[in-house]
Image (tube, helix red, strand yellow):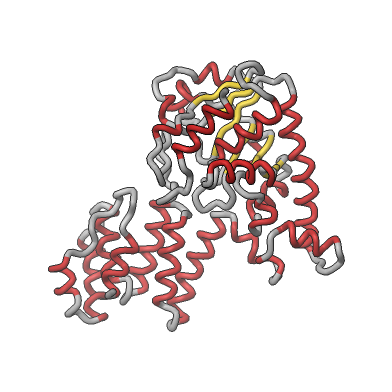
Length: 361
C-alpha cells in the first residue's frame, strides 16, 4: 500500500467527518511531486484557505504529512481536537510517529503531542512511576508489595487501591440490599420523548453508564441526577468527568484490578471517591451464559438482581434499556457519542433475551 493511500485510510472517519482524501486521479498527480513541492503546497494552502472547513484542511494535510512535519503536527492536533483522545486519535499518532522514527527532531514534536493525548486520557500518570511495575496489573503489584517483592510509591498506591476497592465493593451491595428506590438509566434512544426525567430523578439512587449525557436537551426524558457511575476501564472511549460528582464509581468488564494496569481506578481512588469493580463471579456467569462479553448495563442489572431479587417487587426501575434497537457490533445512544468505538463485541440479541428471561421475570 502506498504512503498516500495508508494515510488516506488513517484519516477516514466512521463519523463521516472527513471527505474522501485522495481520488485515484489525484493520487497519480501527487505521486509525481517531490517532498519540497509538498511543503510549499502546504504553506500555500494555509495562506489561501484559512476559512475552509476542518475537513478540507485535514484532507490536504493527509496528502502532505509524510513530507512536512508541520502538516503532520496539524493533522494530529486537529484530529485530537475533533475526535478527542480516543482510539482513532492514538492510531493517528502512532502511525505518524512510525513515519518520522528516523528524524528525532520531528519525532519529539509528535511524541509531545502523543504524551499530551495520553495525559488527557489519564494515562500520563504512569510515566511518573518506575518500570517494570507500571506495566503490571495493580492486583499483582499489590501481591508483590505484600510479599516484600517490590516497594516504592507506586506499589504503595496499588496496595491502597486494592484495600479501598475491596471495601467499596461492599458499598454497592449495601445499597442493593437497602430499601432505597433505584433508577437504572441506560443510554438507548428509546427514552426520547418519554418525559420521564423528573420520575428518574425522584429515586433515591440513580445509576448511569459510560458517556451518558445530562445536558439540558436530554433532562426532560433522562433526568440529571447521578449517584453511581458505571463505566468501562481506560479513558480511550470515555470522557473524563469530575470524580467528586459521584457517591460511587463502578468499573465494568473483567476485574480491571487484575486484568489491566488500572490507571483510571487509581485516579478515582486517589480522588477519594468510593470505587468498586464488578466481581469476577458476576462477569464469569454472564459471559458463560451469553457466550459473548456482557455490556456494562447487563452486568449491573444482573448483579443487582442477584442481590435484591425481583425488580418489580423491590422498587427498582429501568429507563433507556432496549437491546433490540442496537445493531450487532454497534452501540446506539440517545446523545452524540464522539468517542464510541468502531466495533463492540456485545451480542444485543442474546442480552435482550437474557434480560427478559432472567432479570425482568
